[in-house]
Image (cartoon, rainbow, N blue to C red; front, top):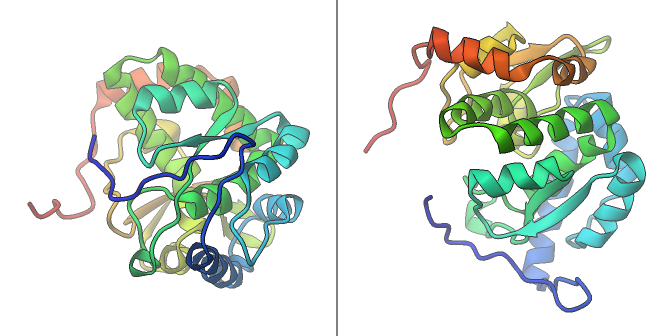
Length: 261
């Protein structure tokens, strides 16, 4: 696992994490900018979650504040983790209804893009939808399946996660909207993903698991749910049989150039 230049902040004995003024200003810059970008682009369930969380603008929220809302909404919690964690730990947390949050925030040099998931990506991108029962159920099911999966199966499950929870789109009565946390926390991708430039395909879990991706580029392809309930319906299916179907069929050719060495 590649090392990160960032080090997660450790809470004190009372669970409080002390951030400095520069870090609080970075949070304010990120959240105010991104709220403007996603206002007409995010799905309503996400916007409802933003309202429930009542995220502060001028300071980085404490995890206990997030936990109070998630616990009351869907029984979820967030868990403080280092910058990068192994697959095993990731699945363990989700299986226990805990969403990992790395407690550092990017520097101003990385304001527009950061490969590692920081506290802004995790809290702003993912936590609002964890207040939604359908989305929360799918994420919990995904964690339980991943915990029991083989290393090879986990690679296919990782693609499903990428194409849904991180970079998913959904059709709504108001038009096509964003629900993926990787898009919702990115100003550039939030605009790009709904443009005519990338490819959009109706969501198919087997196709999603057969689609290669790169983490360091704008996505060439997005899968579009008919509605957010489709994820809840998927959680009721035999997802591992779909994983094995995808494994048997094999990967599609990448829609992007190889990463330079």
